[in-house]
Image: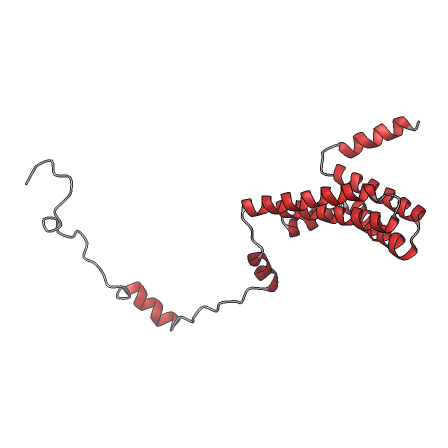
Length: 186
């Protein structure tokens, strides 16, 4: 046996503390006497929201692919909408679909619940509601009324609401935009 041996011989080293059997200590006996039999833990069934969250969990690569796909479709439909500017029904459907896909693309990055909670925060709720209402009104004026003037009016309000909503994500951007517009018209 070498003096510099680094691994101890298990037979040469006696156990310093004898191993105790589980459940044989005085504390375990006292606890069993006072508490009685431990009740089995109840496993709660996950809620519908928790099940949906677990089912829709995406990794980073999947989120980026979803974002790129929705963004690409949004840009494609937005470009196609510009070709049908004088045809209110086609224009409104393509432009509104482009906007829905644009919002969906950011939902892939942030997650749908976080995106919706940010959309309806105190500083964004008015812009969000105007944006969503005029998105529906644009479709209504184009499909049901088939009015080019009303469709363009709703489109302009929808576009301004989208810009105002987008500026809310950039610090001080709304104030800067408001000052620029007020200087242009004063």
